[in-house]
Image (cartoon, rainbow, N blue to C red; front, side, top):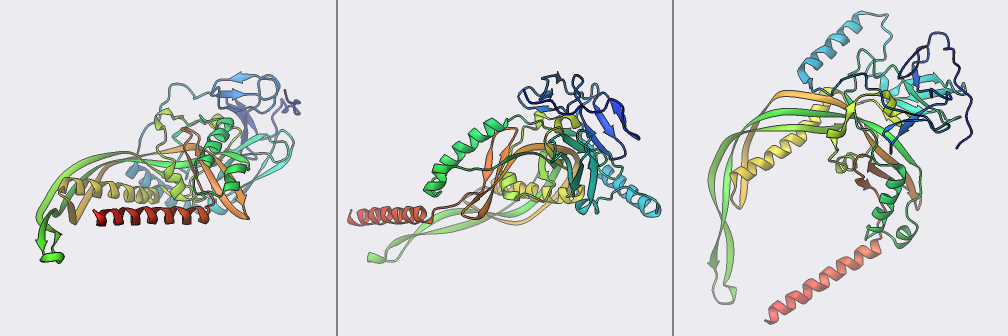
Amino acid sequence: MSERPPSIPTESAAGSTTNPIGESINDGKGRIFPCDTCGADMVFHIGKQLMACEYCGYEKKIDLGGEVSIEEQDYHAMLLHIEEIKEKKESEETEKEVSEQDSENQENELHCESCGATVVFTGSLTSSECPYCASPIQRDDVHKSKDRIPVDGVLPFKITKKNAKLNLAQWVKSRWFAPNDFLKKGVEGKFNGIYLPYWTYDSMTATDYTGQRGEYYYVTVGTGKNRRQVRRTSWYPASGFFQRFFDDVTVMSSHDLPQKLVIGLEPWPLDQCIPFSQQVLAGFLARTYETSLDQGFTEAKVRIDSAIEQEVRSRIGGDTQRVTSIHSRYDAITFKHLLLPLWLMVYRYNDKVYQILINAGTGEIQGERPYSWVKIMFAVLGIATVGTVIGLFAAGS
């Protein structure tokens, strides 16, 4: 058991209030979660899925505030609401709220109630820990700000740091084209648990399309040694209409991580999300969104349109397709604002920086790694050699 830290004062500081789910520091706009037994800061325990004190062992269930559920939000109604708030702010010069445009570069200072230090929150960071005493501390203003869309739900961490390390070790061993010393030494670095902001979108789509279906046939051309089969294509007109419902198209709304790696972490077990509670964030980093709701749907449409085009080609059928036009309508658009967990590691190899991302809900790993060009060269030469041998064998027979 760790040495017990200084207890949090039982009397609230001026301007602060307390409630059953944590202590809110209004003057500094932060939130901590003191242990009911010893006063130390409690954190979210992944294995037990509850709040736990690392000093006295006290445990406490997550308080979700009664019978609540995660509800889909009306997309167009929220855009209208945001626009009304912006117009109101522009007409009220005394408004002090942090705007969506300013928050990305804004620095906020909060006071740590455990040791008295000042913690600086930069940009979209909303949950962190004190660099002096490691106590978890959170901004309390962002998720409640009038001009910010509130968080609907959160997927608690399911994969422990220990299991994340074991998964990473297996991932490293499976990288065939990595340098040998990389495979032997593995990856050394610090895991950071972080909640990333996501938009999820639902929409019923209606699509009209036109195009051509291509069917292959073969004809014989030439004579003697030049006689050969040539593939040709017959084209037939095709058109149609269909509806398709898209459920929970996810868009990561933070700008810090490579999109290719983030998309590779999917699918997320969204059915395991719970209504938003700041208690679940205790002990982890968390960010708020930087991509606006409408920008997020623009990104979601790219993925939706790609899936629609694939279905159009499937419906046209044949051996190949020509798509002349696709016209889609998006109806009944809803969204959710979620925080999803991942383990993030940044490591160096030969003075180059690489990133590793682990889905903390499923254990899926996506990451950057070094390549051994010697191994790749030998693999290419091996494939070329096999191809030459097969060619010579075919010619001889």
